[in-house]
Image 1 (cartoon, helix red, strand yellow):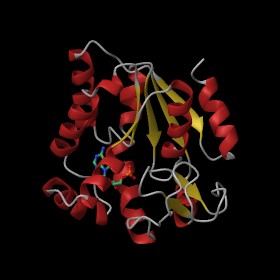
Image 2 (tube, rainbow, N blue to C red):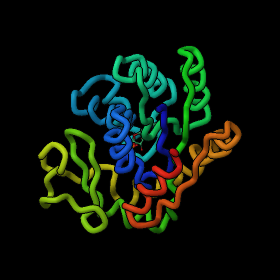
Image 3 (cartoon, helix red, strand yellow):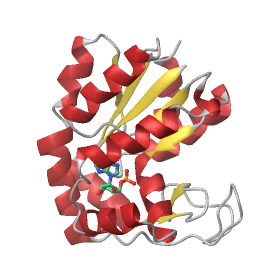
Image 4 (cartoon, rainbow, N blue to C red):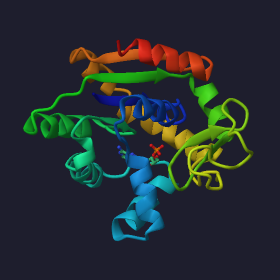
Length: 213
Ligand code: AMP
């Protein structure tokens, strides 16, 4: 199963992607997590990407497409994957189509979580993430079992540097200007599945799995 979770920052992509990885035993490929790992490792690519990320802007397409090309070629993607946070521009979407075509694969479904901007700001304000495994929680709507500890790997949860009101506004602007146009791209391919992402978390998960039967 080759899947994509789609939506604005804070729409629930990462959280729902985790459920998909558990059910289908496929890896979650989050370009944001890969970039944050590169920053933690202080690689040249990470240091360059950090400038864009801290400002809430998109990292250049060439960097992102290179990351995805390498990641999709790894063995664990042979039986499927969940793309999370990629593609974010039309150029990335076209590059993905070519990569998949070249390897005789196709995307099965784009699961799109629709959440109003006002709710996004509230969600991001309460978001806590795991720097080790990338899991995402919310202090009120999706709290970890133990305060500030990751349910999945036990690491201490943190607040992401770009989860502040000013940066979130830029990230939402980038989403509407550069990423939202992809909705039509995937509708035209007949694989776009819109989901009401503003519902309670378990109802979003239920709708997501229903969209896959
Ligand atoms: P995310 O964790 O998906 O919210 O991504 C965090 C930040 O990483 C974004 O605000 C961008 O600066 C950068 N980023 C992640 N994925 C992409 C992508 N596909 N294209 C461009 N920038 C990206």
